Image (tube, rainbow, N blue to C red; front, side, top):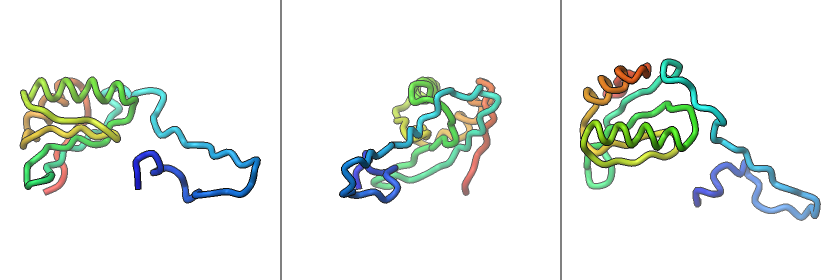
Length: 113
């Protein structure tokens, strides 16, 4: 299923001529302050068995998520991406990310195994 149809709530087709589908805007209008955020840092394996550090739990706009992602990537000196409220950082940087996020004022902790 394509990404644009993820939040459709089961509506595929309607014969009603007055039917208008209303999409749910899943992006929050405001970003919570860093001390209100509760971020979790996971270690995952992505395609090809490569390790990535995944930061989840961010509540806010995509623009603010991209700013946080850029800051984390620069701090670790590696690449990564940000989407759907998650930041992916290439490599195992959980300890470094935890220290940096705490320094920025985020409530964060390591999660997973």
